[in-house]
Length: 290
Ligand SMILES: NC(=O)c1ccc[n+]([C@@H]2O[C@H](COP(=O)([O-])OP(=O)(O)OC[C@H]3O[C@@H](n4cnc5c(N)ncnc54)[C@H](OP(=O)(O)O)[C@@H]3O)[C@@H](O)[C@H]2O)c1
Image (cartoon, rainbow, N blue to C red; front, top):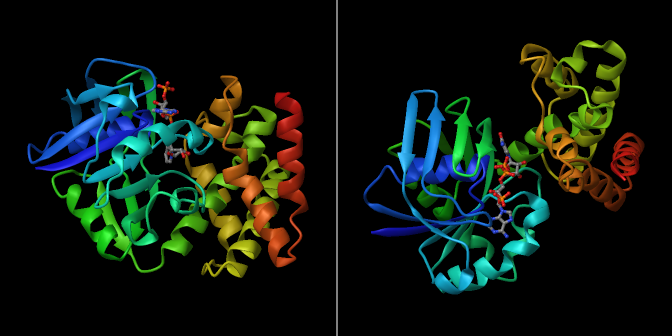
């Protein structure tokens, strides 16, 4: 029996935990901040339910084969108690989150070869604790190494397209390019259809162009037309879609601003690449959010 503990059973984490729990060969425990009874996920193929053990106290947890962390990036510090309890000498960690800094925050816990950074494209919303709407089957990509391949194997029974990629860095920066543009929605509090406004779209393209320049300096293989591709994607999607930065701002929660835009400024500065548009959007959202 493979033991799995999922920290952060929100939209992504709850969906993943419910799918993994469908396999009786996997023992899934959920490490939650807000307790709930059972998971119900409305998936594209119908409702799935699961009743994993739900822990809210790290003192009740012990080492497992796999830890999957799916908290927002700003909740990394608050999850440390779980990592203390769950990580043993053989434990592998999968980091399911946005951004390009999956591994670094955990290197004091376990070596890089036992960490699977994961780019997640599973659009999901949590309507209440344990109640989630998964809008597409979606996909997850991890590096093509032993830990990545072991992670992929956990999902063999699910319709989620989980695969390895030989160029994880490029995958992560491509997702960052998409996410950094969403800061304009969060700043103006306007949903995805804002990308049809050509002036707003031009600001988004500028954010993405800076991301491309910095990502290339970091070794990502990003195409010249990525800014236009990102805008085309926003325009093709639901006009009322609200990205998670925007949703967090609306709800008065912390925001993944540093993971989605601040990182472009920080890494740009390290390479001597100017990123004034991302710096401005970070400053304005911080000021607007108070
Ligand atoms: N949602 C999407 O469609 C989507 C798609 C792709 C990528 N992502 C990325 O995936 C990551 C997770 O996003 P999400 O949308 O799933 O976030 P979310 O719905 O806000 O879920 C985060 C979960 O983490 C829990 N949590 C926070 N601190 C905790 C702690 N110390 N111990 C245990 N649980 C803790 C929260 O608990 P509470 O119940 O108390 O709030 C919540 O259940 C983010 O990096 C996001 O950008 C999201």
